[in-house]
Amino acid sequence: MRKYLSVMRIAWGVAREHAVDFFGRFLIFPISILLLYLIWNVVFSFTPDIGGFSMKTMINYYLAVSLMILSYRRFWAIHYNVFSDINEGNLSIYLARPIDYQFQWLARMVATLSINVLFTLPVLVISSFLMQLPLPNLMSLLLFFISIYLSAAVLFFIQFCIGTLSFWTERIFATRDLLLNIQSLFSGAIVPLAVFPSIVQEISNYLPFRSIYFVPASIYAGYFSNIEALYNLGIQVFWVFCLFVLSRSFFNKGLVKFDAKGG
Amino acid sequence: MSDLREEKSARMNKVLKHLFLLKSFIILTWKHQEEYRKEFFIAVADFCVITLLSILFWQSIFGYIKVLGDWKLYELIVLSIFGSVSWTIGNLFAGFLFIPLKVAKGDIDKYMSRPVNPLFALLAEEMQLDEVLKGIITGGILLVATLSTFGISVSISNLILSLGLLLVGSFAISMIKGVVSLLCFWVGTASFLNTILFLEDYGLERYPVDVLPIRVASFFTYIIPIGILSTFPARILFGKESNVSIIFLMAIALMVFWVFLLSQMWRRGVKRYDSAGG
Image 1 (cartoon, chains in turn cyan, brown):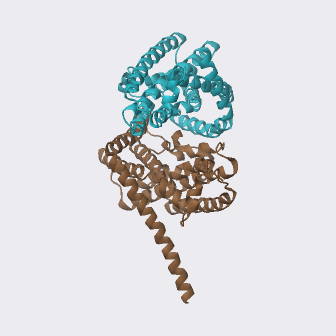
Image 2: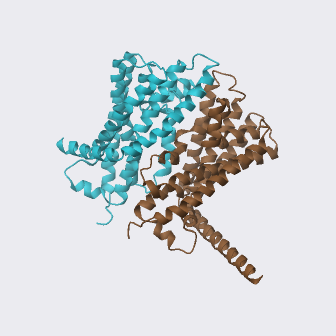
Image 3: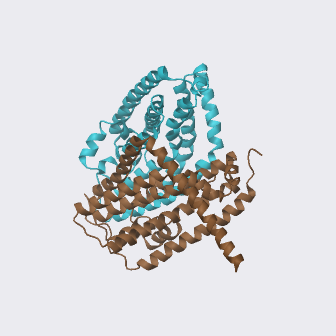
C-alpha cells in the first residue's frame, strides 16, 4: 500500500505543476454554462418540466457534469498511456518493478482526481450560489462526493480496457472514438438520460456508462432522493467490480502476447 | 520589365513548389489511410454517432416543445449536421494543435531547415485529410437523408451559400485556434488559453445562437464565432436570413483579421524560438 501512496504523492505533485493548465480550462466554463443557461431558459419558457427536471435542477445538473468533465480530463488519456507503454515497450520496465501496473495508474488517477475535486467542488458550490440555484444538503453532497470517485473508477477501467486492446492491434483510436461517443450518449453528458426517449433510457440501464455522469450529477442536482442515490451508488460499485475484472482479464491475456520492443 | 517578369516567375515557382509539397502530403496521407480502411469506416460510424447524438438531443427536447424561437426540429437537425461537419473541416489545420508540443520539444527546426514556408510545411504534414473527407461525405449523406425524410426542398444557391459560409467559418475558427496555439512562443505549453484549442469538446455549435439575447448572440458571432459554423449556414439554407451578404462579408473580414494576426504572430514567435536541441 505504501508503494501506491508514494505513486499518489508523485502524481499529486505533477497535478499541482499542471494547476495553471487545469485552471485555464475554467476559462470556457462560464461561457459554456451561460450558453446552456440561456438555451434552457428558452426551452423552459415553453414547458415547466422536462423529464422530471425543472429549470434549476437542469442547470445544477449541467454544472455538475461540466465540472466533472473538467476533473476527469486526465482520465481520457489512460488508454493512450497504456497504448504507449505497450507499443514503445515501456511496459517491461513497469513489469520489472515490484508494483502492479494497473494499480499504479489507478493510484496516479486517484491523486489527480483528488486535487481536481478539491478545486472544483468550491467552484461548483459558488456557481450554484451565484446563479441562485438550490444547494444540495450535506448528505447529498457526501453521496455526490463518493459517487464522483466511483464514476471516475468506471471511466478508468473502461479506458484501461481500450488501452489493453493495443496488445492485439496498434490502431485503437477509431474504436476508442466510436466507443467514447456511444458513451457520451448513454452517460448523460449531453442531456440527462431522463430526457431521452424511453428506449435510450432502457438501454442505458444495462450499460456502465450512466454511472459516469448521470448518477453523480443527478445526486448533486437533487433529482435522486437519498434512497435512490444509495441504490445508484450500489449500481456504480457493481460496474466498478465488473469492469475491474474485465480490464484485469484483458491485461493478463494480452500480457501473454506482449513482446517488448527494444529488448 | 524583365526584372518584373523574373520576380513574377520566381513567385510562381514558389507557389508551385508549395502546391507540389501539399500534393505530396495528400498522397502520403491517402496511402497511409489505405493501409487502414477498416479504421476509416469505424471513423465514419463515429461521425454518424456524434451527429445522431445532437439529433437525438433535439428530438428529445421537441418531445416537450413544438418550436424553439423560429426553429423547427428538422432545421435544428440540419444545424447539428453543419456543426459536426464544421469541426471536421478544421482538421485541415490540425497542425495548430501540435505547435505548442513541437515548440517545447524543439521540433520546429525540422521545418525551418527546409526551403519552404515552415508554417505551411508543418500544417501540410499534420493535415488530417481523412477526417475532413469523413465529415464531408457522411455529413452530405446525413443532410440529404434529413431533407428527404422531412420532405424539404432547398434552392441550390442557398445550399452553395450556406456551405460557403460554413467553410469560411471553419477557417476563421481554425485561425483563432492557430493564434492561441502560437501564444506558446511567449507563454509556454501550459497556456491558460489552450482551452480554446479544444472548443469542439464543449459542443457549443449544437445550439442556435440567434435564440439568445442579442449581446450573447453577438458574442458567439463576432468574438467566438461559433454562430458562423452552424446557426447562420442553417438559416441561409432555409432562406431565413435576409442579411446574407453582410454575414458573408463579416465572416470573411473575421477570417482575414485572424489570418493577418496569425502571420504576424508566427513571424514574431519564430524570432523568439529557441530550439531545445541547441
